[in-house]
Image (cartoon, rainbow, N blue to C red):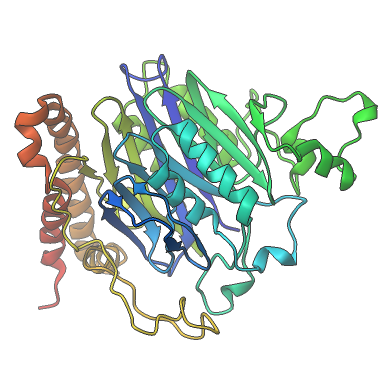
Length: 428
């Protein structure tokens, strides 16, 4: 079963007047996650945009975005835009699921990217996603693994900006949204919106009644998660040990918020292994993101799997960004994800940073203890660099225009530094 975990902390639960967003994107263990930057674009009138499977109408202007995404799809697992909006999505399984989910429509990851490209606030991004969901529906294979064409799911989203956050959960083309104005919230592959529904699709109760999922005459208040979850799981944290990633995430976020959630604390949560939030195995955390959302937002991405063995690198939206290509996967003329019939073969989608990180992972698993120790020492050194980088980048952003020249290529610069660490593992 796939997994993802997305978190948000708003004042007064943060260490200042800012919002902290974080996500681990858990995907099949052989899938590559790339990080890309796309500039703001003025589009010709009447145009279309090709998503993973289908085309939708293009808008006049799209915002600049930075995305962490499976390399084979158009959409993204998580990302942010130049307006300070960040979104992460999750797979969920609902009573509305069925064979029709394999029909090629919009993936949840496509909806996420469209929301970032078109939404200047969290509320606007929510409206973009729900309007497109109602018009085009969601569906299509969600993995490029051989035989993965039978893997599909519905989606939930955590959408945040510097002022508020929204949890959006879907079941087919039915949806509900909850507004978060303060405190903490997290989602982990299950429906979590109960009776606290701020907005919803007009067909929500009608469909629930039609599918015999809810009887309005019973006098029971409508509970979105209980009604539509294929298998309902508790969403409230009790006194005992958490028994799900959802509850573990709530516990860790609650503990971190006691004296304020910070960038470093959010990274620690994403690196938590006991809970399964840092996931390994046939599904693993393929990429991670932490964002500080404020007047001057900062975004950190790994672009590599397993956050405990990865290095968070900063990205800031400034003019004339020089992003580089070290986290961008190669393209193929006859890409098996794009030609029909799809997914008949596999191609190597590893980007340069991913290849370098593979060397580190091999070093860590080395049977020679002395060689494995070199890998652990590399992680230790990268973690120290990460710590210094966080404080330096926050200080630089606070200086505004005078620091922008240093920020245009900061992500690419840190990727190159990371690759320099991995070069010690090159075969002699």
